[in-house]
Length: 203
Image (cartoon, rainbow, N blue to C red; front, top):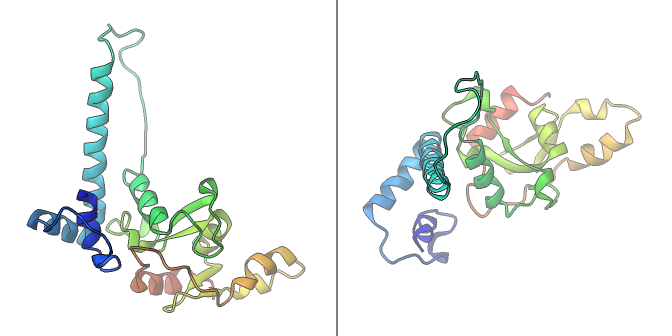
């Protein structure tokens, strides 16, 4: 019911969901903060979740003296908010590829429109994402396909230049003009799509 309070603030869902009654000022503030800085909200959420899970795990385990070396070198480069971004994007599309309808989770990716490396602010923003299968995700990432303002696929001329490659023509070339299946929430941001056409697409 509490989650429905937040869902009711989403303009795409509106009155279709019923929460606990009146949405609190704190709920509205958190929603606005998420819209303006999803990366920070996602990081705080993950940090809190990990802390609670660690506490629960420690509460369930007996305290035993440590064994083995007490120091080790560990280098970890983790995308702290990647799991949040993936969950938000895939659930928005009901775990289906926006181009093909493929619904095998292991073959689905949450594709960043503006790449992870290009914008810290957009890393966790679900409006900067599209649910695509692994092949079309790679094609989108490499600029072989892009999306116009009407959410239709544009295919790079490089695809047609792959002479004799019937598979490329079938799975990529045939996508020209295909319209994205709309998500239930977090529609792809048109400004991000325009950025992808300018900087990533190989026209």
